[in-house]
Amino acid sequence: MKTVIVGDATGAKIPKHDISLRCVNYADNSSPPQQGLYPQQVIDEANEDISKFVDFLKDENISVLRPDATHDPDYYKFCPRDTVFVHGNNVLYTPMSLRARANEHTAYNKLFESYTSINQEIVNIRREDSLYNTDCIGNLKVLALNETEPCFDAANVLKDNDDLYYLVSNSGNLKGAEMLQQFVGDTAKVHTIEDVYSYMHLDSTIAFLKEGLLLVNPSRIKDKKQLPETLQNWDIIWAPEPIDIGHHPGLCNSSTWGVSLNVFSINEKLVVVEEHQHNLRTELEKHNIDCAMLPMRQARTLGGCFHCITVDVERSPE
Image (cartoon, rainbow, N blue to C red; front, side, top):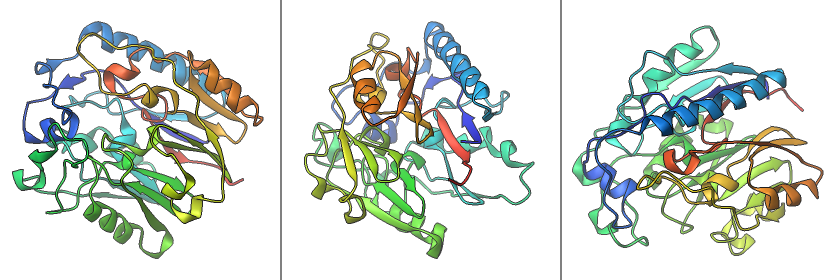
C-alpha cells in the first residue's frame, strides 16, 4: 500500500427518515433511530481510534488522505469505501442507495486535484420511490432495490487485479453491475455474486489476502460453488466465529462479521485486524500473515471497520 484514504467520524448523523433509509438500512423490520447527530462519545471514540490507525499507516510509510474537514455530511464521511471506487487512473463516485448520501462525493473531490492523471466521474441518479421495494421490509429474502435505474455503493465491489466482484444486495442492483462494467470497459471483468445475503456490502463476506488466498465468512458462503468460477480454485481460510465488541445502545449498523472479517491489507504479509479478534489472528498467522491488532470501538455502531473506513488509492506493483 502506498496511498490510502481514511475516513472521519466528525459530523456523523442518523439521516432524515425516508423510503431509502427504511428499505436499505432497516429492512429487518426495526425502526430507524431518531434523526440527528450520533452521540458525541461515539464520534470522539471513533476519531481517537482512527488517529491511532493513521499513525500506524504513516509508520508503515503509507501516505494518508483525509476527507474535506469543511464538509458537513447528511449521513457521514466515516466510510469512504462506500462512496469512492478507484480503478487505475479513474475514480467513480457511485450512485449510492441512500438518498442522504447523494452528495457525499464532495468530501473527497479535492483529494485528487493534485493527481493530474486521475479522471473523476460522478454518477447522478433520480432515486425515485419506484427504485425501492417495500416488500423487503420484514423479509430478508427480498432485496431493497428494484431495477428501475442503476444503483450501488462502491463497497459492493472488491477488486482482484482486473477481476471485479460485485455483490447484488440491498445496496446494489444488477443494473448497477452493468453500469460498472460500462465504466471499466474492457480493462476489467465484473463478476456478480448473488443470493448470498441482503445487508449489504461484500467486505463482510470475503476478503482478499494475497493472490490465491481468500478469507471467507462461513455463515454466508457455505460452499465454494457460491463463488464465481474465477475464485473457486483459490485456497480459503474459513473465518472463525467473530468476537462481538458491542455497540452504542440502540445504534447498530453492522453485524459482528462486519468487524472481524473487515480487515485492511497493508501487503501480502501484514493486515490490520480489530484488536479483539484473536481467533482470526491465529488463523491468519498459520498462513504467515502478521496482524496489527488495533482498536475500532464504534465499528458496529457506525457500520465500518478498517476496510470500510479506507479506500486504496495507490498500491505498488508486486
